[in-house]
Every structure is written in C-alpha cells, then in structure tokens.
Length: 120
Image (cartoon, rainbow, N blue to C red; front, side, top):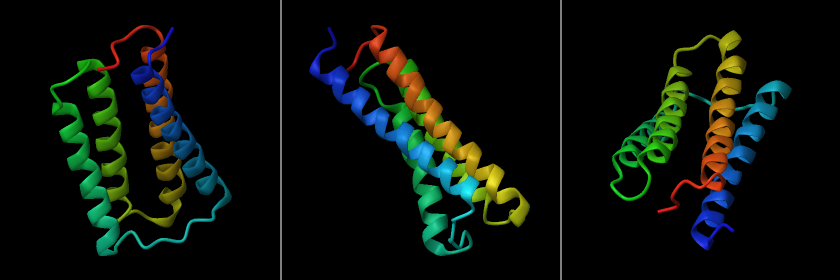
C-alpha cells in the first residue's frame, strides 16, 4: 500500500505526464504562438536548466529518481533554449521531443515509485 508521500509524488508526476501530452498536442496541431528570442523565454529555459541541476544535486531521497527528474528538466531547458536559433521546420519536432521527455519522466518516476522505490 503506497503511503501519502508516494501518492503525492505520483500526483506530481502525473501532472508532468499531462504537461508533456499538452506540449505534444500543441506541437502537432501547430497552435503555438511564442517568441523564443524573447528575454522571458531565455530566462525560463535557463531557470529550467538551473532547477534541473538543483534537483539532481538534492541530497534527500532516492538518487536515481533525482537524476531522472533533474535530467529531464535540464534536457527540456536546453531544448527550449535551442529554439532561439531553430528554423521553423524544427520547432514542431523539438516541441514533440520536449513533451515526450516530460511525459516519459512522469511515467518512469511513477513506475519506480509504485514499484517500491523510497518516496523520501
């Protein structure tokens, strides 16, 4: 029986699965209207990379889960940063990749959490 900390982690990672699915849907439908050369976009991608590094270095809890969670944020941040100079033909595959990384992160962490990995 999962404890409350494990269920909270499952809920959090479920949000990442939904976010990844939303990004993939937006990429496939072509309904994205953003300026990747804006300062806000660059700041957001930089913050994702920094937060991914902090998550990977977090001392509490399972190291494997920290590496998966932090590594996914770093990859998504770098993909977002790469959109600054990308051609329009590469925007859709890049967004699909970023969404896939977030969805895979959520599914992997949920599977490891429910399989008995430590929650803290």
